[in-house]
Length: 490
Image (tube, rainbow, N blue to C red; front, side, top):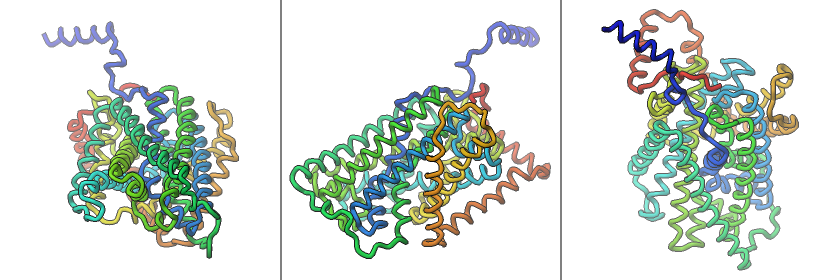
């Protein structure tokens, strides 16, 4: 009876091959509109609500120089985005910077990139975005003069992070639709600010634009902080390359989405800054920790709560998109053998990289319960900029080493060199003006070499340790109901 059943199953397999729909792998289901929503949704996070203060401080309160910094950072971001587009068109793999660095410079440097994202940048960023959501949801009810309860905010932030991870773990289409919805909501919020500013301009509130380049005792030591604040506001465009394997016709879609998104973001940012300055002086902005909320209080009165809600949605959209992208970086790093094997597996029912998404939750929770996260992001911004420079160096390297490799999109090399030179200037100035933060960033990055050696390079592990690793992997695979991809997606 058993033999007959086996034979019947065998005949069924040969005569009725399994369709792709029944196989476990990540689908290409993300089109141009979700891609645009994805990029805008990540880029317009909390940056436009906090960076105006950082940029003004970095240029000693000069309105004209602040707008120049906004424009320069926008152009640099577009150059960087187009460079990443060429790399995404060359390689069909997901993983973003990890993939490109590994292809160009080997696994050690690629591991250090995923190490910094996994251990510092991603959990800290997710924790900050979640805390922003919690703070902006609770403050309108408690009032700005009332101190928000510490653990209340963190409990709400924990619920937000858990919900985002759950959605990302269970459905790619739902995650994509949610990102588009949040992007639309935050755009509406910024349009309210822009329209209010336009009304203020018509009423003659233009005094803050008189003598825009007047500044006393300009301090060049503060200039790198202005660029960091500007680049932070535009950051996130690189995440689209982390999901290449799930995008329809990525060689065309990513290019269009990158250009459209960054142009729209730039226009929105410039108009929003103009709006801020119609109701707030540079001194007001420098003294504010919540620029958009203070603007709303001054102009919208009893309807100011809408801006608090839109800022919360903005942070939630950035959190959702960042979680989606970084989970794919861990997924690919595991598939390449640089992280535990289970992280590269896909849930058999939901067809999502559930293990890689769940893997990011514990560190984020730890960050939520820790102290001042903004100090952590200060030196992690230095690390992030350094690895972007390393990634862009791959473009001239590939032009030299692989001249015949197909390039569906080819960026002018001058764009790449401009981005690299300006970024190196910022990094050097950071070493000069804030050596300790830069030193900590380099130290944390190099600390990952210890884990790289023991986890990847050490091939002669004791049998007992190998057995423990295998048993742990098997347990987690069963827990997450996941298996390796059954279809190659790159």
